[in-house]
Length: 194
Image (cartoon, rainbow, N blue to C red; front, side, top):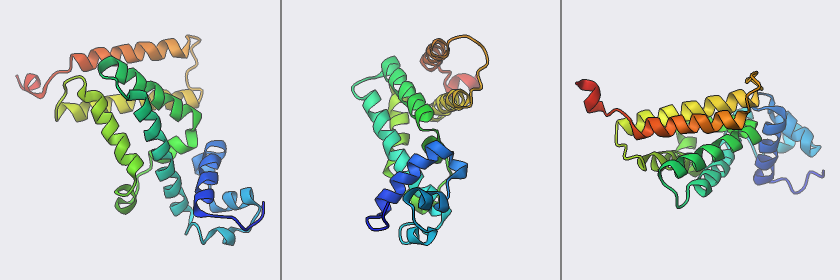
């Protein structure tokens, strides 16, 4: 591919695709340069270093992830919103493992504050669980339960970590049923103090 026509957008898009195919840990400026058939130095007008490249992928991936979550929960509440959110979460994490891993990176404050995708993902998480009538601090605790469960399941699935022959989708539905019951019967902070 010729050197002309390289833009920050094209470099970022290629890096996101390579993150999925190579794995985020193997994504480098050199790998992106090889993808375009150019010298590494040709990319430095579009990305300062590997860290900046990872940040670009994280911001881009978070925007795509947030778009999918938003579509999945639009017009839904309670159990239906939970299922839509969880299914979209799992699908993104399994289909785009490198980009998903990038969304889990700890970003510098100046990058995180300006990532609308990351902010929307947080807002969508809270909005989905508010349908269960949860308020702080219970809302944050419930989001931590949900995020940990979805992340763990998707990460294990991606790594072929489920060795049992039971159908994964059946287990997934049962997990979501259990989360729905837990969210609907969440112990309030007041109850815990008694």
